Every structure is written in structure tokens, then in C-alpha cells.
Image 1 (cartoon, rainbow, N blue to C red):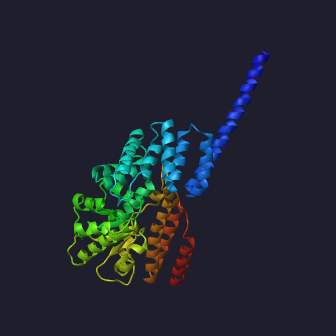
Image 2: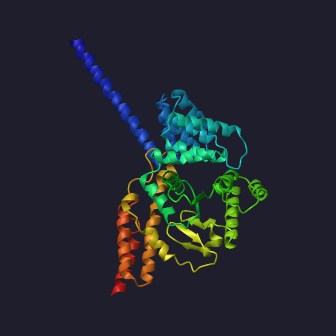
Image 3: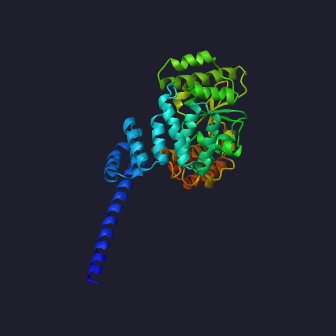
Amino acid sequence: MANSSIVTKIAIIFLIILCGCIARESTELREALVLYRENDLRHALPLFEEIVSQRTNDAEAHAWLAETYRRLGMKDEAVRTASRALELEQCNSFAHRVIADACRRPPGDPGQSESDTNWVHLNRAITCDSTDGVAWVSVWNEAILREKFDIMRKAVRKMKETGFLTKAALAYGRWMLRTLPENAILITTGDMDTFPALAVQATEGFRADVTVVERGLLGTKQFLHFIRDYVRIPLPLRDSHIDSLIESADFPENISRVSSQIFKGWLDVRARDAFAHPLAIAVTVEESFYTDIEGCLQYAGPFLLWRPTPSDSTPDTTALRVSLEGIRPEDFSGPWVSTQDRSPVRIRYTKEIVRNITLAALAYAEELIQARRFTEAEKVLSWAEQFEEETELGPIHSERVSHLRGVAQRGRL
């Protein structure tokens, strides 16, 4: 009986120690992930390294460390650490995707050896876990470079099916597309003003007439082939000219140069009424892309619409009003990034996109004030205030709303 009591006490002590170790390890991992998700990778790195040194058989910890290495440009360390994760867990989708992304060739690089490694591990990643939306993002990018356009479209559908694209992000995609002119080309930049729009087109057939063009990819030969041969939109430059542009500079400088040349070529043929596609630029695109044509762009809410003649930069009041009609704030509530997303850039910055809707409302209110339509302006401002309160980003334009409301109220006196 006494021996049994001693054994019980030892077991209890062991459990207490074990729970303490687990709690400590969990706390350390949480601290590392907080820094990682804030995109503070250099401070997250030593924490992940320490965790892996203590948890030598933890495949997931190795995968997080490998991804941190990759994002810091430490390719060899990333591949070595992810390979160790696969030794521990052969079907770890995260580790396969890290190796694939680490071995992805730049868009302008014709080399195949690393890209073959990339494609093998991407396919293993989605075989191991077809619900991994992050892996489908990588599949989309690589499918373009391999001109596997059916797989590219499948990847976009999977981003929605897996929940990688959230309700709020998809609502933003619809907002971007809804008021574009028929058969327009919309220039976007980055993931979260591109994928949601593509996803609602692919899965809902919503505004399938619009061609969404990611600005960076517009500078790659493979995506240009997609535009010309798959979407059937004529390119404004001869193949030989495009090839010479692509080959004339090192990545990534050539990407920006070629995309600008293609876009300006489209503008030229559009100006001559020889191009059937209206041209628009998402408000998320950096101003440096369109500085030299800014006078011909008219602000219309989700996008800037190109006009053949310079304007006075006055927003299109009708377009702003229409862009705001029917918006339900609850559609834009909740997280903008899925819990499965492992990109610290998307995690930290995607929710900032919602401010573009508020800015459209404020621009419309300002135009109403200029037209002395003060009561209507106050209603729009109240709507903007409510909209911000219901989004993840929260109220960030309160001072501007208060200022404009004061102007409108004084105008009514």
C-alpha cells in the first residue's frame, strides 16, 4: 500500500513536470508566432531555432523555422530544415511547400532543375493536404510559369473552397469587379486584390467578362501567352519586341519595364479606338506605375478608369455612388485572412485594403458637400462611420468623418 502511494506521488510529480514543459514550449512557440505574424522575422528566428533545438522530433516546429529561413532569404537553411521536417513526417504539406517555394525560379529565369524540384514538392504538398490554401497559392504561381492554365484556374477555385479566401476578402473582390465597364482589363498588384476577384469569377461566374491582370505577371512571357492565347486579348507588341524587352534586363527590373510597356501599348491602341477593352487600375496599385498618365485617370471607387483625354482629376461622382450602392457592412466584417495563412505580409496588411471602401465614401461625401447637397453628405458620412465600426480594421478615419460632418452641418445653416 505504501509502495502504491509512493508510485502515485511520483506519477503526479512527473505529470506536473511534463505539463510545465508543455506549457513552457507552448508559450515559446506562441511568442515566436506572434513575432512571425507581425512580420518581425529577425526576432522570431532565434526563438524558432531554440524551439527546434529543444524539440528535435517536432516536424511542425521545423517547418516554421524553415519558412522563416526562406522568407529571410536563407535558402539553403530553409531547404535543409524543411527536409528534416519531412524525415520526421513524410507527408507534411507545410514542409513540402517551403521546399517548393525555396526552389522556385524567378519568372525571367529559363532554368528548369530547381523548378522541377519546385513542381514535385508542390504536388506532394497538395496530395498530403488538399485543404492547404497556401499551397494552392504556390501552385497558381508555378502553373502560370509552366503555362498550365487549367491548373491555374483550379488553384483559384481551391483557394475559395479551402477557406483560404475569407468572406470579407471575397466581398472586396466583388466590389472591385462590380462597376467596371464591360470587357474591361483591371490591373491589380499582389495577392489579395487579385485572388479574391479571380475566385468570384471562377466559382460564381461573377463579372467573368473582366480580365484581371496582376501587374508583376504582366511582365512575364508565360502570363502574356495566357493573355493572348487563352483569354484571347491581343498584345500591343510583337513577340520579338516582348522577347527583347524581357531579355534586356535582370529580374526583377525587367518585370516592371515589360509590364509598363505592355500597358502603355494597350493605352495607345485604346486611344485609337483599336482596342475593345476599357482599361482600369485598382486603387491598390502603387502610384509609380501610372504617374505619367495620372491626368487621364478618373477615380471611380475601387479603381481608376483611363480616359483618352486628360481630366481635371475630379472623381466620377456617379461611379462613386454606384460603387457604394448595395454594400452591406456585414459582408466585410470578420477576418480578412484565414487562420491557415502563413504569410506574415498577408496576415499583417490585408485588412488595410478595407480602407479603400471608406475612402470612396468620404470622396463621395466631399463631392456632395461641394455640390451643397449637405443632407445627403451627412447620410454618407454616417454610413462610412458604421461601416468602419463593423470591419476588422476598426475606425481609422474618425477625424476626417467628424471634420466633413462639421463642414456639412455648417453648410446647412
